[in-house]
Length: 293
Image 1 (spheres, one colour):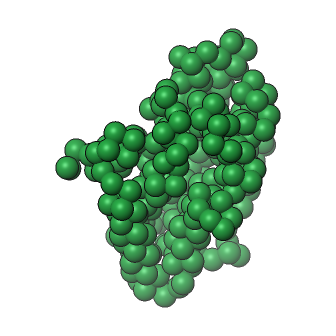
Image 2: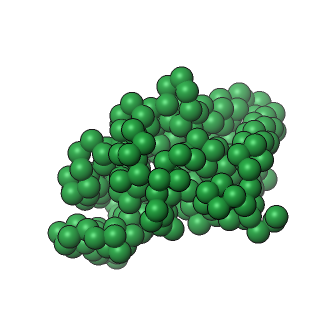
């Protein structure tokens, strides 16, 4: 049973959660200096519980589209525990509810320690964004452009959750690094929908990939990554060595995109796009750590 819950947890996907939290800590350190170590630990435990809520709830919400997906990848198609009948929908839904309460409880502790409601507000916002994306009545993944909710979640809610959990205030929030990374976060959301396009189309989902087609959506990913990279260098003094790494990864995405995206290339394309976004977010975080306020 434990092994099935581990599989359902999709721990590698925590890479979508971890870098934005690091960015939030870096934003606070840039503005105020040192960090409260216990708050940092609590933020990342809350980030993990939020991640578990998301993957468990998504498995429940996407059951029918995942069942139609006969070629899942390491990044997409769900954990498969429901499809393989390793766990029940009731068990996973209960697990999601428990993780939601754990996230709110940890956010409440964070709020209590700093005397501010902002950590609770952002934690609840993250939960509601998933609800709006995958569940009725909004269910934006079936209405179109639901990737915008993922962009807001990982690009705004998570960094601000970490920032305000340290006691940050809006007047001192360095908005520019957050905003310039939003195109990259949107690219991440679009890219992870690429392999699921056939199943999503059959089940009535209206992702950007379904609406625009795989090839156009792939070029959209490339363009968004490029825009984010250019503007990031305008806003922050990114070192040439870090830029070289980012450019190398982005170029590899371009080269993959210029080829026919057969199934095996799609997996590589998505994986490389994830690396490109992760490197950009961590590079911005590192530069902010080094810069005085």
